[in-house]
Length: 205
Image (cartoon, rainbow, N blue to C red; front, side, top):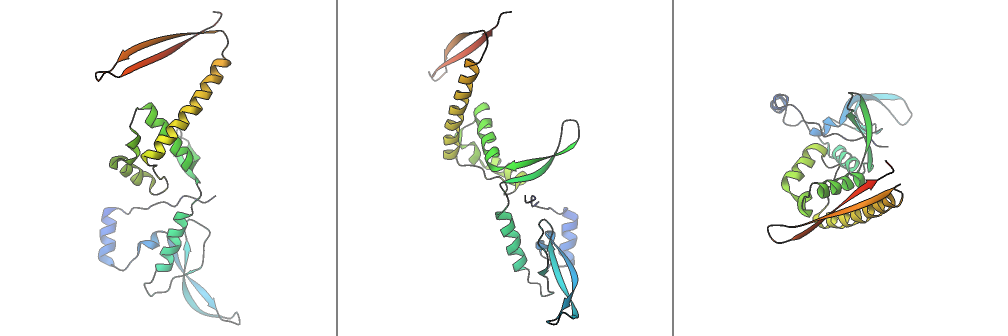
């Protein structure tokens, strides 16, 4: 399983000092570790020391890191690794009692929970397309979670309804005792009619 690639952010003061020190330093070195290695010739004899780079977040080692200022090949590898991350990724969180635990990030689970939130909180289908929500996702998840469009949200909500409907049928079929339903009717200020059904579960007590 591939680890999550973080999006490191440098403190403002450090960033300014770094910019003043050298404008040629690339952000790619936030993801790579540079070091010197002994180069061997065709006869496997040690010859000269050369610059190498290892990728910090995967077992990818030995990239060329010559002092020419050209890091385009390292940037390409970094972007490829971002695109090819596993849909399930190991992240870390703090439990209610303070322990550090791990959990797997899954795009499908995140999408399903977003749909559940939209339904329960009575948000619009276009909630996932709002700029404020997109900013929240971008600042907290980076490009790991891709918010669905309003059409996908609409389709997912209908799927969510069918699943919840079948689950409710199973609950009602397997409930011991009796069920007493009551209903409440009302109209909204714009004359839309609503019906609320409440089920009362009755047992032998």
